[in-house]
Length: 395
Image (cartoon, rainbow, N blue to C red; front, top):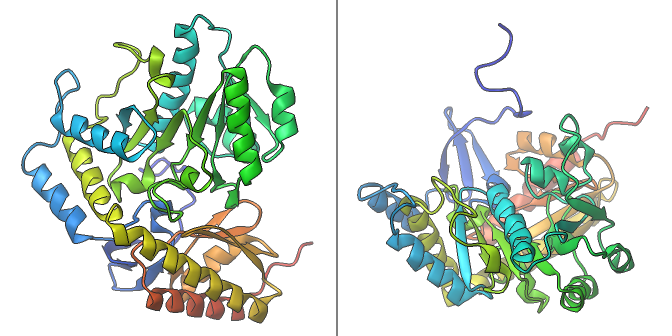
């Protein structure tokens, strides 16, 4: 037998963390890495945050799981808290971002079905998007690396160029029921939508009776300096998927919707065995306790300003490698002039963990609790890695 016990679907690197503390990860030998990946924007309070750990420990000793056949007070309490903090009137809890997107898609389709328009089943999406790895969510992107081996896929989505409002206008026909977009594309290369584009999508949805679905799985929960990225655009969605940071490391997600958008979500239309379990709810409550403190978002914005300035100051020293900085808040991208994945691999040997993205961008997604000394350490390690790096020469 040649296959490994773990199904070999990941190209795993050499790092083997067994312990985390704040903004650092450690392996069994005690080697240390500055973690500016945060589990891909998940560990927003860093590792082993005492309030989050304490909440999980307390709940684990009380009640970890019960069925959604019963009322779950922790779900109702957290749902009300999210409703009070957002545009939404109702919430469905999931275990992941992909599940939150599945629920969002079903909510959109159920809305039109309930309104007597089952023909409005298709959703407009955008090039280089990443919405998850279920069959539905890989159908929502044009990325070949996600779709390859799984076609033919459902014809539920029409993928358009990101940022092209005229293409959106031309694509709206009687089969279209909604528009799905990441306000800031993460895996696609830290590409924020422009104000005009996102507002234009909202206006088209209002004009044609479509639902605007925002994927804030990566950019949501304080990552960009506001609780959710769309707040900075002044654009309100009908449906929003969140996950990653909301659990601070515990697997949980949610679909948030207005009463109007959720009109088709009635008893029997959706469900989840584990979704909304008390342990997950406790983790989310602990995260919200921290990120809704008045000083927290101010800290995120201050650190974001300092990190951007430090990176921009670093670029001229290595302008053969680095081009520019992009992104919002602490969802930042360093555009490279060569393969970003190769540089991310190289940087690990200099003690820093980063994430590659499309368009040859290095993602910097640090815990939101970083301080100025972490920024200095980040730039020092990036500079050391850059000095020792020799990009591969194209054949």
